[in-house]
Image 1 (cartoon, rainbow, N blue to C red):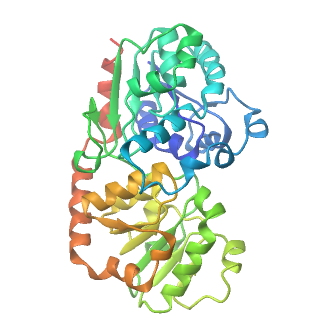
Image 2: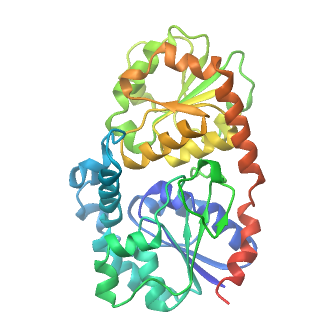
Image 3: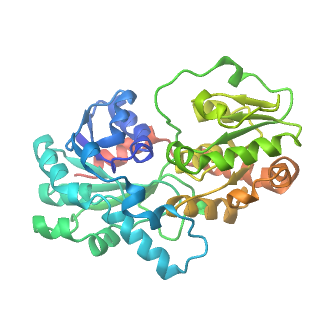
Length: 370
């Protein structure tokens, strides 16, 4: 079977799909990723990648300047205002859909695995007359009908409606997800790109280890003030802090206390195994990797998707969220002192472990096009 994965051209969107692609490849199926811009680094996962928009990085405006509302704190917004922001999200890449559809025609897949916030996969599947499976990104749920209603122009340009055969696969247990019932649930398996794990990350620390990761976008924009507050708090906490930033960023923080380790890029799945807790920006990769590691989380979100994840963590009881000014020794200390957070995090890890692994989904996907 020929399967084409069509993630939005963003790193985390492509990375979340990798474990399922691996399962299909290991079972002997033909798998190709159809994506571009920053997401082409998914090629490091050992899967073929076709870039239908090779010039888009030089042409498009930075997303933060084109739709700044999507990247601001939204915890105070009403339900109606949040729907409007989600509408902006699904329209972001609409002008690139035609290139994806043209490439998909040449690839001739039997099945399209699409990104639930990117309508290119849905449109391509409809044009080709093949089934489509939406691959979840985390707690947030975007129904295909939402994309058809709020990002309609690509469907109209190609004269199609939603594919006749549709399914969805979530990568979180029911207790963490927004309302709605997927066709299948699948275990989240962390993939963060190619890299080398340091040996110290495997060693049990002498005192509690707290990871601090702000993701690529947040670290480059609003990360400085947050990191500075972590450094200030670290003076008062008997714990080892691991900051996943490079040396250039670390130099901007001034003198560091001896309980801070500058780690650069470290595979989060490896790092979190020996951590007692994590402070992060709310990205799905960081949040879900902490969930499967079973550690409490302090989420400091900046933007719609991150806010959704922060609310999910708080609702589930395995962590809490706040603004940059809430990063204090007292708030970080809660991660180590509140037993209810650790108990909830442990329970959630067990829920993830009970879900089918990506390799177990291959039979379902193989049968779906028939």
